[in-house]
Image 1 (cartoon, rainbow, N blue to C red):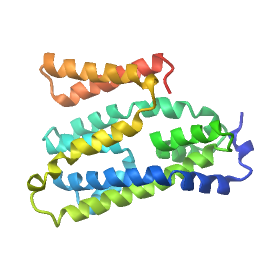
Image 2: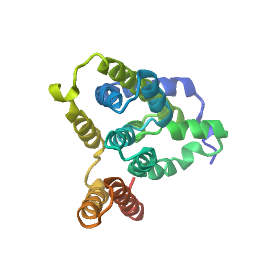
Image 3: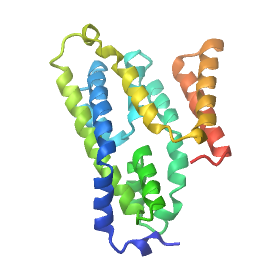
Image 4: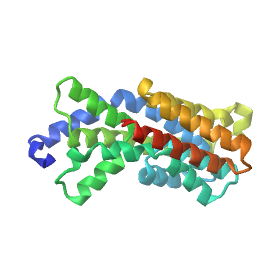
Amino acid sequence: MDARANDTRPWPEFCSGMRDIVPLALGVATYGAAFGLLAAQAGFGGGQTGVMGGLVFAGSSQIVAAERLVAGAGVAAALVAGLALNLRLILMTSSLRIEFAGRPLWQVLWGVHLTSDENWALMHAARARGRVAGYWYLVGGGMMLWVVWVTSTMIGAVYARTLPDPRSLGIDFAFTAAFIAILCSLWRGRGDLAPWVTSAACATLLTMVVPIDPTWALVGGGVAGAAVAGRGGHE
């Protein structure tokens, strides 16, 4: 099936996606600013933080990668940890085969890059209400989130330069707080329970039993959780 056959009104659908995701984007801006503050602690400037957000565009992955850098784990370990945390995106984008079918490569790559938990879930929710929501709705929502994320992280990183020692203000807890906020936004119901519990249990056991760097425990937990989600047909 060629998804382009349904592209009769791409611009209105794109704009609907951008408009409908605004409430979620406000939440993204909050933890985006928190990440920017912490990226500055890892040595990133405002421009570097913005480039990272634009190219990676994965809040939880960026937070973990920056935390690993601050902890001195090294660039390679930070990248691996960030990638492992976003293994769920493989399952999400593979569920968009119909939306991507028949499209030129640049549209497929654009759609894959802009797919996030928020606009993916919003697209399915809009469809459940009987609305037209396909590729351009997904991309519209993704573009709004992308702009908000990049902007808020840059503002956070620049503003951090004017602050005293983050620990004196309690901002050093922001890594944890921002990650918890992202985690809560990802929960979609009981179907998430099995892969989440598996990931947490595997990472915890590896950390406690096997003498390895926490980065690799996180990778193990991410792979185990993705495997459980894949076997269960989790979306």
